[in-house]
Length: 85
Picture 1 (tube, rainbow, N blue to C red):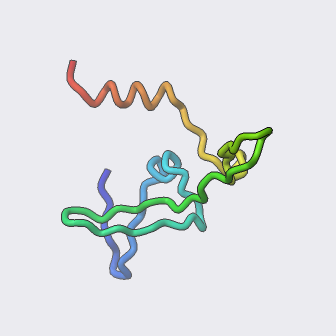
Picture 2: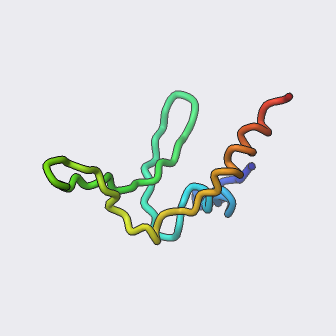
């Protein structure tokens, strides 16, 4: 998908990409510049370690309702479709 930068320096991320990446209004992103590209990386809090019995267990720190829905079958099919058979 292509998009263009407007006069104010803004770029529109297509809705399908925003939905797949879990980008919603107010989502914080890091902007990374490397040798050949500009990348947006969604800022997400890391897991929290909680003690369960005598062990530390990593638990998500994000409310499950805020997580993006992932259609695993569609992702697999999309990946398979990328390569010629």
